[in-house]
Image (tube, rainbow, N blue to C red):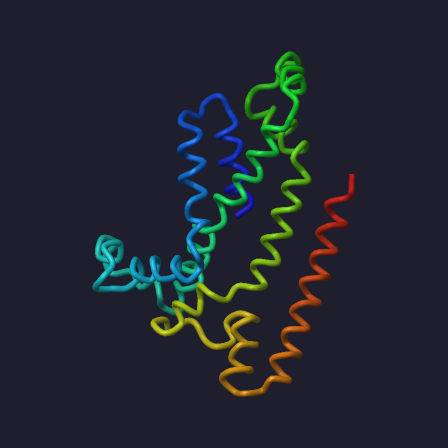
Length: 202
């Protein structure tokens, strides 16, 4: 979510890119799709006997125990890479033109300018998306729940939120679910603090 989005943003910000508005919209569109709908779309593409992709790849079981993690990660990437890319692209557009001109006058090529000038200047945007990604990963719930009924690799404790949900509504143990939710919130707070402190370092 971070590296891919950053690479796409740098590519769109470079002089090599064409039809920038189209690709920005195309990459951002999956983020507009609600998580349940995204899960159902990819469930159709993952189901053997229905999916044209599965048949094309010779019957790969995307929902099996060994493959389902990659399948869920793929859905998350599809939904969030474009969102992060828009944040990075907006930050890149705010870089003063004279800074980039100075880099070119000093003999920096496109790749050197991207890595040594642009990326450090959008550090704040990168830290923000890292923070969002960590919190979003801890809150992962909708996509694996959609795949749960057809995958033997996803169980009720597959993610922290699924565990809390199962304890509350499957086992009627609201105390356990509440405790799990509090621990999850504390973990998110600690990780957010660590990432923020790391981002503030110079």
